[in-house]
Length: 369
Image (tube, rainbow, N blue to C red; front, side, top):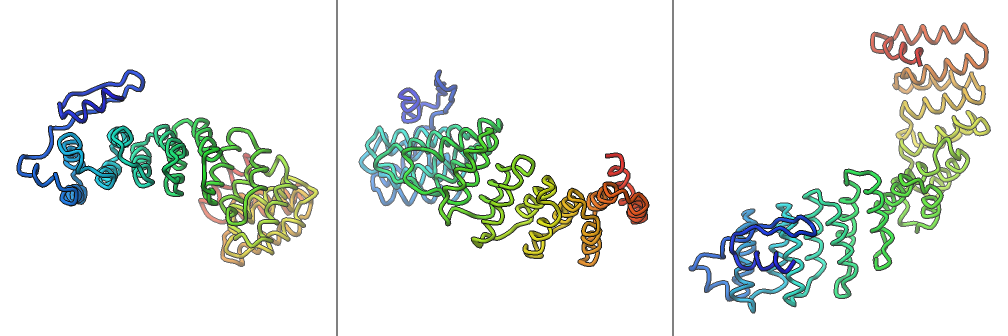
């Protein structure tokens, strides 16, 4: 790290590789032209020039000017100057240079603030470097002079979720969310990310425990959907429906995703079946009930042998201007099959097949399945 800083500060133009990380950073060109040297000694003029370079997207120029000032006129350099350059580096996704500058601020005794860390984290995120973003956020939390911000937290969390390895991504999300040094309360979006991470890691019980511990302001359709995924429609259908109904009672908006999950749970458990599915469907806002939700409700009716209700839902879809899909027809056909009504099942299949070329293609696939 010291060798790297020396390279950047010297303006030698040489490349340095850090054996521990494989990081390569190129040195600057030596600083500003002589005409600008006198003006840089003044802090206000330095900030003006750096801001102008950033505005023109000349991150390289801003970067070189700051390092020249740090070497030739260190008394003129302040945190605000470093922050302007960090922002420029963030815009350009120059994450290596941003991290080096952030470290140099500490070594040079320049106070690092929330903006400094946020810009460096954002640079890592934009460059597709989730590990670096997470480690920088951890360093932010460990710095007693800086208060972690929700912007930095969510940026690091978003970067972690985009890691190429899904398991490693989940691990990094949890590493951030459960930091002992975290002094802020994660919002609903971050909590949903943590719930999904726990589910991906197979820690479903822990995910449900986390969901139960959330504050009201941390509960949103995203967290509810993540909790429903943790419960799983086939693992614990009753618990899933209970979570869904509790969220609806607390005023959390129902979405197509959450409604479908609850209806699919009814289809997976005959004790819930069509009767409970119809209750949920009728209580949900009309905007949340799409063809997938209706298909799940029809499957629930088929599960509990409520053939009449299944066909009724199929007709209701058409009345609402929602052409029944092949999945909906297949669910209704299954209801007739279980009830021993072969002629009615064949009639439904013929109705679907007569719906057009696309319908016949889907029907064939549905029949084969």
